[in-house]
Length: 261
Image 1: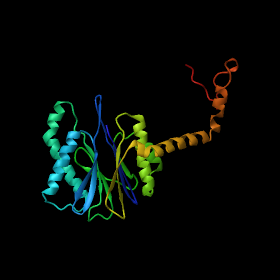
Image 2: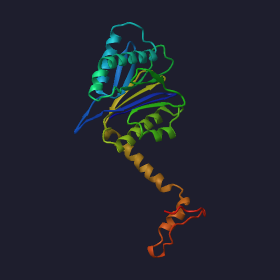
Image 3: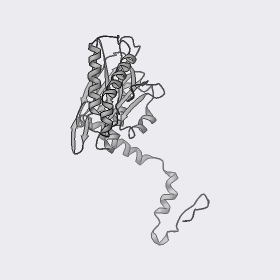
């Protein structure tokens, strides 16, 4: 499986992708965040789904860019191109994949800042080739394993979140995911595009690189848990601590009728 997240805030864009691929009993690492150089600009793609579909689509996109044609000076135009080539691959390989029980399921996140863009942009491309743009009221996209990282993002991430904090939240969403599943893991690839710079900065990080951050987060959570106001739980815990000889059964402080089983 896969974990990829793209975050767009006022100060720029964060992209983070794991590299783990599990095939039966085998585990390998493959890059899921791909960099594109287009003229004097740069952008990236992240994908989730069949590796063969991803590789063929990227080859077709690169071939189309080298062949000239329509000028790509806005990122949405690149998203259109990616969608066109994805549909081309679906026409070519979709029928044969379906005969073996494989669904055509490539999802992609595209980010960057081309010459005519006013600021860095972020797009989500569906398997059908259509796309949506990241919005101020929902400033992130995730593909692959999306369930485990959502709570912290939905609680803490806004469009006004500083870029540094957005990077931390992207990592914490990944950390929550890899702690719960075995098919998402280190190393991770990270890209940062600041609104001022407009060009991506890439880095690959290992578990050792991020151990201090992960451990600090775990210790912080334990500390917060110990300090939570829990007066509402006292009646429950006091009743539960009564020894067996003195246990009086169910406590119903609201005097509501109890359902009998």
